[in-house]
Image (tube, rainbow, N blue to C red; front, side, top):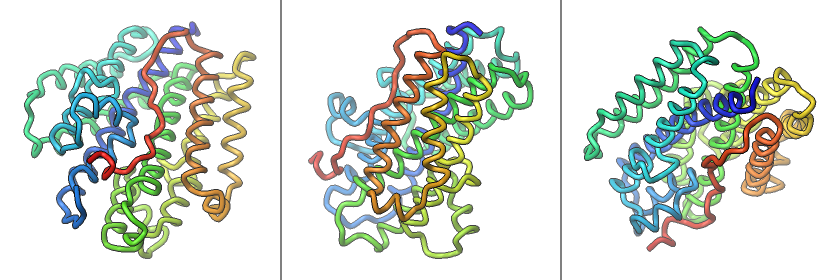
Length: 330
């Protein structure tokens, strides 16, 4: 396969996954905003979290200043000047898909193209109250694309690059959500175990569609240790780090090739660390430190994959969340 084709397939899948993840984060933020929160600067506190998760807090501050529900939502959902917005991600996904029309099925192209056309019919001055329906639409379109892909594409190296982009992006997003909640989002130690803490951890689970899974497995009050265990170490949870690294390693093995030896070694090393890891060891190291190391390792893996298989093009890649609280914006 040509490096340019592999590059486009990888980023097509990654941008679609990123659009869905952004929709999930914003949807949870909107739901959380409906709950009473008795702290100073509550709106900035709530809406700075999604900016941190997606790594676009600094660029948002330059354009809008203090975090507000309407401006954060529009910036992360529909702003074409934000390279990480849902709009930009779906635009880039379509551009990548158009470049490899011969490597994907007509059904895959129709889903991506119709998604882009429908997105451009959205009213740019959409009311905040209408955004939850928009987020559901984004998630549904992402689910449809993955379903059509698995149901129509030949199971060859093209599918392996699509899976590689999807699960590398998903692992990155899950780690960011956990890191922001545990290290940044909680405003004070006194809130640990309180109502705000409970709803925040519940929001973390809902943002990765894991709330029902948590109840089924643990049947107990939501606790940080068990949430971390579910989203890091359990490979039966589809959006956990373990499950994602299972898929990343398998995709790299299927792609093979002598140039990808270092990428396969890095993926195998990270997969083994999670596969044989214990949650007590994670917390003894420090959850923030563990997740920061995971994100750095994932970024390194992404660069190795690019150097081994893909053309040298500039792409928007998310940066690690800024270590600040929402209240520091005031």
